[in-house]
Amino acid sequence: MGEQNLGDPPVTVVISRQVKPGCEAAFEKFISGITAAAMTFEGHLGANIFRPQTPEHHEYQIIFKFDRASNLRIWQESECRRQWLARAESLRLEAPTIKVITGLETWFTLPSPKPIIPPPRYKMAVITLLAIFPLVQLANVILVPLFRSLPAILGGLITTGIIVLLMTYVVMPRMTKLFSHWLYPQKRSRRNHLRK
Image (cartoon, rainbow, N blue to C red; front, side):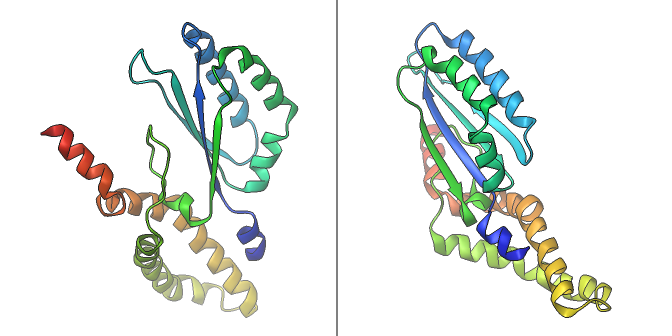
């Protein structure tokens, strides 16, 4: 099961679409429909929609997550998705750009109207260490005694699975926000510059 998770990681998908002027209302209906349809598929974890900031800009950005790459693939290959995309063909200025982020980078994604650029790997390693060390210590104190009656491999697998779930859905989203100024210093300096 652990090996399957390594080969089937959580994924974040970033889609940028240029919409024809005057087609915004129709595109809003498209977004509502396709995101509602995607939510009915197993593993969909939600979506963020970033709309154009000014009338001169026509780019919409859609960011959504799936718990596994295999569940994303089922959605991507579905007839439901194909039909929704066909409805949007006449609304776009050009082909959308799609970026799929997997692995550790999915732990370090913040909602943003700009393309997601993961922080340097050494920073991801430091934050991951800070997050996982106390979890492992707590697991040794709390979980390991609970599973002592199980075979060592099974107990280790369950403990590791709990740690991975906590890291993905509870700890890392909060750590990313807490250390966002260090992980994304360019964003911070840009905000400070705008304030001046």
